[in-house]
Image 1: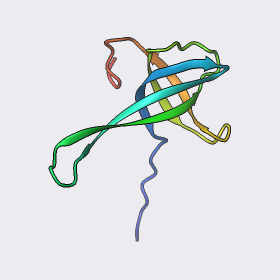
Image 2: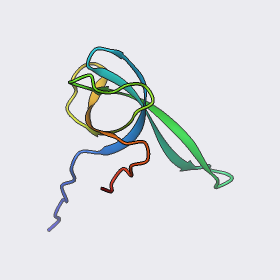
Image 3: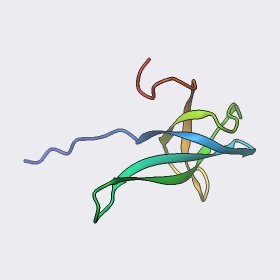
Length: 92
């Protein structure tokens, strides 16, 4: 008998690159992947559109975002909280 483990929605941290839209921010998320030949870790970036209901974010803010149902054609993430500049993503 196989039990599937239910995981919650993905949560990632990123940097706000644009806050010019109404209730939407663009967030740059960084991940590190190993180069297939040289095995050195290389940074890769993804631009995600995030729902910001109260328009509280500005450019260069660090934010914590969570995956959700599609809100529009390009927006399927929502803002969880705005992080302090030196605050850890998972810590207090």
